[in-house]
Amino acid sequence: MKRFLFILLSIVAMSCSGGRESSPFGGRIEYVEPESESKLQGTPVLLDKEILDVFWVAFVSDSLMVLEFPQRSKLFSAYNVNTGECIDDFIYVGRGPKELLSASYYDQYLERNDTTELFLYDLMSQEKFYAFNLTEAISSRDIHFRPLGKVLPNTLACLNIDNSTNLLWRLTDNKITYQEVTTSGEILNTWVIFPDITADCFSFMSICSALSPKKDKVVTTMSSFPLFCIFNFDTGERRTFTSAGNVEFENGLAEYKSVNTFTDGGYINVKTAGEYICALLEYSPGVGFEAPVSLQIIDWKGNIKRQLLVEEKLTTFTIDDDNMLMYGRAEDGVIYRYDLSEYVE
Image (cartoon, rainbow, N blue to C red; front, side, top):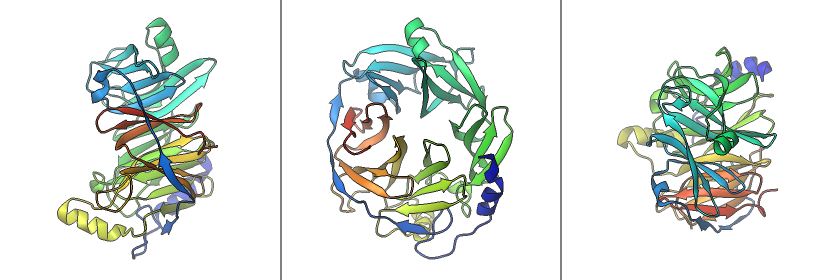
């Protein structure tokens, strides 16, 4: 990744041309039609009623699900997804050696030697990035963190690249940026995500991202427009795609600034499953779609291989990559399980 500094700086200098197809990510918007469409049936997962206030559906592996509860004194709880049993709670809120003030999880984990570690970061207090040993916590009821590096000020989220670098997205110079940062906090590279748009519009353009399996590409989605952008670290190429027939970003931006709302849909979240991207797209009411959300399965060239219509109004989701299962939290707090094995290779 270190070799793409010059490429990134060149991209930052690019400006978007006018017109209905100009992209907030830079360049033009490419229309891509789903190659196939079908319905995705979900099965309710019976868990403790207390999960109704869960903020995030986090890690899932085999029969184990870990949920994040940011409003509680303990931030994470592990459940058996088959029985609904709460196995244990982990990580108190605080400033102690085994505590975090605001632990956040971005669906990254590492499995090796029969040990699973979740990657957590604390933005409020210690400004550190950690690997949390989940296996040891369950077996010994003890908390252990492995340092992954420093989180810089104004960081919104972070992903781990390798043993020496992390990818942070931050507010810098009134821009929303991705930055390649060493574990000691040295900034190696900067990518401005929206070249022509300042950070004061971030409230409606909140984004989600995922790294490719080889970590040579990143996909970024928008919550207020049905757009996704794939950026190639090696070549510097960035391409923006949509499956919506009429995406007028510039007109939509002007409308938002005048009435503080949007009529289009947008992506709820994005994950990876095997060699594919899984992006959950929410439709606005009255736009004529058969379901409130759809799961788009996308390859790293931007082709939407399948569009799976989901009847449940999901607010977030995660992927059990080993078993090709998706777990999603609906608006009513129920968590549903979906089998992706016939759709994802």
